[in-house]
Image (cartoon, rainbow, N blue to C red; front, side, top):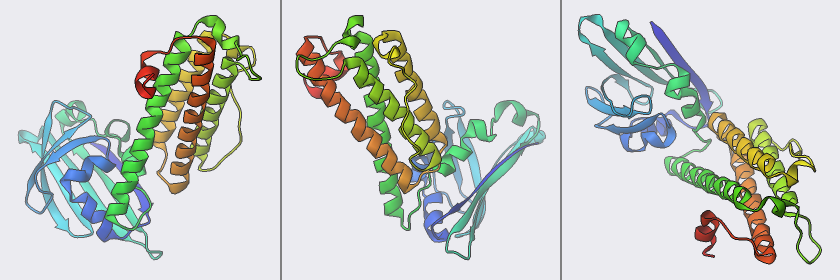
Length: 289
């Protein structure tokens, strides 16, 4: 048997959480491991679930033991005991008004070992529950998801734009200044990388822990090192955001990072224009250059 589980205290009532748990249309909003659910999540119904574990396969699950707004079970099975899988959801109200959310289960049989990857690493259970925001109502939760995902998406576009610009500039450009008092293009990238690394640490810790940058003064004039630092900081941000619990303070830190990235894009626009270099397509399209 292979088993898995995740538990978390959520600052919301069981009724609010239950409404989201039983709404098939919004299930992928909070669980990134689920691509879609068709059918009604109700007692005696059979739903069809598509997962990132196997996007080409549709899992047909029976919904049973439904006790609103406390618990339910999803199950799947094959003949002759080749496979049987269950997933249990339970909501337990706490004295402080929060709810203990539990999701777990297991698989039995020889096919379960090979065809159903259900531990937290593959199924995204931990990451899923970390996306639950602290809020009191369903619409607030959905709005929080939308805003956060929008910020993350714009950060992704910004990360791509910086990589493209750093890789497309002539190698000597990183050491160039404007004709008016200014720092260098390389120094601009130093600040971008440092802020990205520092805000990522802050997001992981849940609070600001200081500024530092992995790039040295010598590194900022070497194109390959700047590009590597941009790629490395992007990967680390993606890792931390995927694994960190969503909170208001973390959402604010991501918004501050996005503001910083856009601010330096504005400065780099002046540098590239002023020094007569060409912009990559991502910048031309983003800023209608």
